[in-house]
View 1 (cartoon, helix red, strand yellow):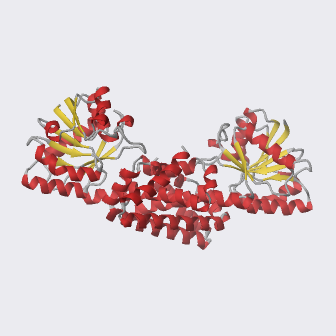
View 2: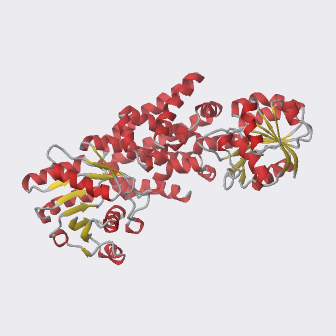
View 3: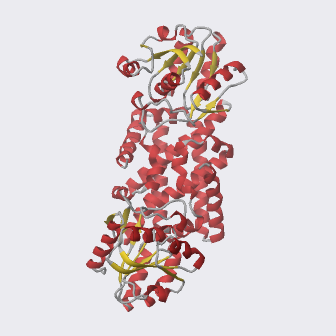
Length: 282
Length: 282
């Protein structure tokens, strides 16, 4: 059991970490840290955390586990201060949706002050954000990607794995660069494409949206997400996203030329190949 | 009330028309017509239809309403035979997902033998097909696009509207060409894009699919659809789809250049503009 769990940032993810830790009795004390007291108070009000503070040093004092849950760009800027304020025994993880840059910063900070850090990315979320939509069961059944490197202590990986599994997650590990390419492919690219789909309809005729059915709504649901959060993610993962967009353009172009061929067997076998791959995901 | 409703093709859509008509008592007698008796028998077995036949002439005899529910390409080939076999009082509609070509054929056939025809496109479906997945409530809350022209009798439009509304649908009307552009935008393009998304991930690394979360599943759900059905739809609506793909490429390219600009306000305001449009759809 964690004696003192400190969570920096109590939005959708940080709030859900607090609620899950409380629901599963993963920590004796939970401290919520943030810049804006008004945004922290609801978490105290519903008992998701025991204490709130806007002072990083005060919040991290005595913590044996720290979860960094601010948006990725804020997180990177905060890390030096976190390393300075965190006690030597603290195990640090985060919930950032890109990992290479964060892990790089953590390892360079640990070169001066060694702290256990394991990058985490819970593949859970919503197109909504903020503590109000956080849930104790957000991570139930969700894939949590950990990104240890050869500099990461085995025991730290084990403890972070146990934490996420206790919150209901399914833990997999990847190196940070592979993680960033994987999420560019299965998360950031689909988001950008969903944005472009919505915009494409508007360009043709905004009234066409009036006949959009379930297929269009499903395909574009993620386009209704926070612009601030996604601007940061797109920027943060620029390189891997560019690779994913290139793969997508090639795939779309090849599909179009298969369709243009008019060769029914070839068209159907290509659609069938893709259908089978997608069907496996359920 | 319809005295004799004849439905040609008892797959997902035709089967659901039969079940909805039965559930809402829209017809005294329902006749199911198809090429393969083995595929028709389940509908008779569950009482969705009163009679089945593989003979178009026998099936259409005495029908006052006919719903054509075979796949679009089959449907176009069948229409001459339907016009020949249908009694003069029959009101004919269809469920085809493209409309310009079908309406053109219907009007040219009606120039020789005048029959009331109103093109319908129920924007309801599933990535599954066949009678086994048909449901009486498939059209509940669904948008049904009717595509009358200046040659269509007002009364025919009224009766077809009443039919779909009784089945739970929300009826809107468009001219056939606008319909085809609208569905290219909100249905066929998203499908092609979903296919390309799945293939893009495979091109980068098939193992990345193992960390696909809800966002990816939502965005690509329609890629798990029948290759036969979609090959026909893509072929049938080739021209409008090409226009939609061009609009999409332009939208994606513009989004990329906004991201490349690094201008945070501009990026966020573009993402916000799209978020707002999508959010309206719920």
